[in-house]
Every structure is written in C-alpha cells, then in structure tokens.
Image 1: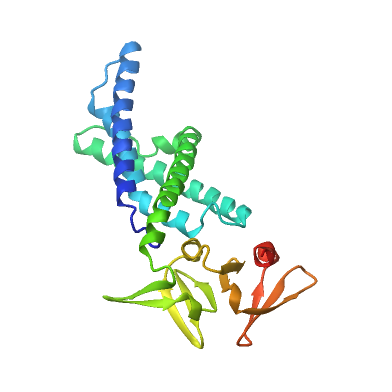
Image 2: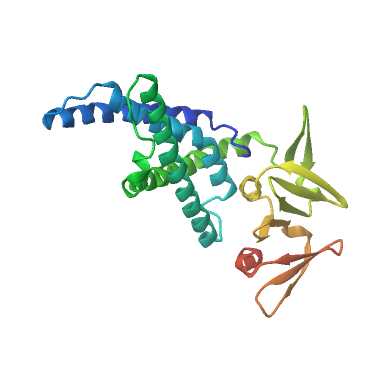
Length: 262
C-alpha cells in the first residue's frame, strides 16, 4: 500500500481518542485544583489539552509518511531506530513549541496571558510524555497497516503492479520486471530496457510483492530471483548480482541471507 491509502479511519479514530483523552484530563485537572483549594475556569485546562491534540493531529500525516518510508520492521534495524529517534526529537520540539504558541494565541484573544515559552521551560517533563505518545502511535500505526495489508493484497492484481499516470492506470506484469530500485519518493521499475517511475516506497512494494519471487539485495533495491543468473561474492561480504541480460547490480552483505535462502 502506498501514499497512506486507507489511513482515513486511523486518523479519525486517533483524533476521537485524543479529544476524549483531552476531555478526561481537563476534568482531572479541575478536580486536582479543587482539591488543592484553587479555583480554575473550565476553559483553561481545556485549552491546554486541546491545543496539544490539535498540534499532534496536524503532525500525523508527516508522522505516518515517515513510518511508511522507514518501516520499523524492515532491516537494517539500527537505521530504522536512529531515524525514529530523530523523528521523536523533532516531534517533541515541534509539538511543545507549537502548543505553547497556540495557547498564547487563545489566551490573547480573551484578554488573558500565557507565556508561549512555558512548555519549553518544562521540556523534559513534556518530552517524557511525547516519547510515550510517539511509541504508542508507532505501534498502533504498524498494527493498522498490517491490518490493511491482506485487503490490499487481495484487491491488487497478483501478477502485476498497478502504475498510475494521472487519470490513467496500467499494469506492469511481474514476470517482465528484472529489478526495482528506490528513487526518492518513487521506485524505478526496470522492464527490459525501459524504466518506469512509480510513486511508492520501496518497503511498501516489498510487502506488496511478498511471495511473488522478489528478494531485497540492497536497502534500495529488489530483484526478481528468477532473473538472477550469477552471484559473485566480494571479500567485504558484499556481492554482485548478474542478471540474464548481463546487467550487474551491487548487493549488500546485510541482505545476503534472504538472497541465498531457497
């Protein structure tokens, strides 16, 4: 599945759950303040909670695109972990900064004051919560995509890849593809001497073609196993794959085992 197709229900459920959580937290804050002998109007904790939710929801499309781009279940896992740790840090900084600014704006419209830097002054406290939220969203989104996966594979043509060109679409038979290579936000489908650009992440294509005879030989390259005529190893553990047409492709030692498995 590519480009987040089918993620609408995930976004809707996430938004509903976050707003419900915000409402519960609002009443919890009011009860805590009442128990401490302090009076607080309902709108204040409600603004604190909902501004956080709005910022998170605004970031969700970017977050889910990152997860699809760097799928946590795909090797090499150290790279995926490093990318998502960086993603967590960016998520936290943007969330904490933006919700402070949003609260300041709301307070200003009712003639009250809120320092936009207050959440940043409590960065460690906020970061702990954001780390749990990021991990939770990551787990839920992976489960959601796994849930959609059987539907996608059933609906798709089992022996071809559907490629869209504006309003048109056509199907590229898998038996005509020798290899598939990542190219930014696209993949290149190599069909004989022709190269077809298809907007998709390589990890999505790999999952779509599971069981169809394709094997990953590099983090940016899939090869149809039946098109391989020779594998030449190098002292480093890397290797070169030679295809039936004479084309040679570099392979990484990290993906040597999947290639050699029967």
